[in-house]
Amino acid sequence: MRIAVLASGNGSNFAALADFFQKEKLPAEIALVFSDKKDAFVLKRAEKFNVPTFHLAPKDFADKKAYETALLALLQREKIDLIVLAGYMRIIGEGLLTAFPKKIINIHPSLLPAFPGLHGIKDAYDYGVKVTGVTVHYIDAGVDTGPIIAQAPVSIAPEDDLTTLEAKIHQVEHQLYPEVLKKIVMSKGK
Ligand code: GAR
Image 1 (cartoon, rainbow, N blue to C red):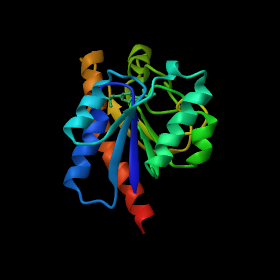
Image 2 (cartoon, rainbow, N blue to C red; image 1 turned 120 degrees about the horizontal axis):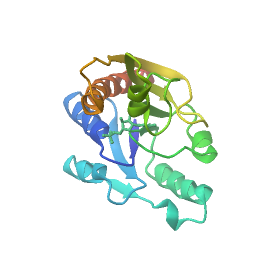
Image 3 (cartoon, protein in one colour; image 1 turned 90 degrees about the vertical axis):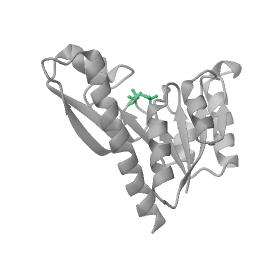
Image 4 (cartoon, helix red, strand yellow; image 1 turned 60 degrees about the horizontal axis):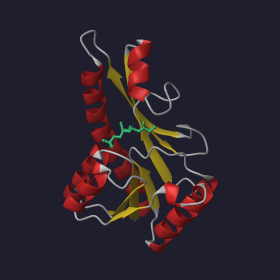
């Protein structure tokens, strides 16, 4: 199984996955990392893991559809079977969804359907909830919607601030995403 990781930023989730795939002998590989941002740190991380990197800038295309058509062509050329979003801060369009039905998964830093969007951690913190968490789900046409695959809770302690909460969330993400991906890979491998 050839996996593409799509990411827009730091790439700590990619690194956790790449570490995991190096240690576990799975019938799958992270075949490429794609970013919509040229300077995304995830691309540097990928080079360290010797994972091929690709970049397309949405602004270089006439519209979102043209951008996604180019991205889809790249993913098909690279014979990708599964798309893993790891901090990819764009809504997936119809073309990709149709080409990869139930083959695009995402991680989100809240217990969906609570606190979707770009600031899941901060929104939960500001709201004052005592428990937030992490969700892994299949992608559909909405913003952080789609069938939930797994969730893990994270408590917000009175002494937590946004920084400590972010650290807790990321730690849970880095465990949950590899576990979920392993299950998906193993179930498709049978
Ligand atoms: C992660 O916390 C991920 O859950 C979040 O972006 C961060 C990326 O971190 N994704 C979303 O908010 C999607 N709506 P990373 O670049 O260090 O992996």
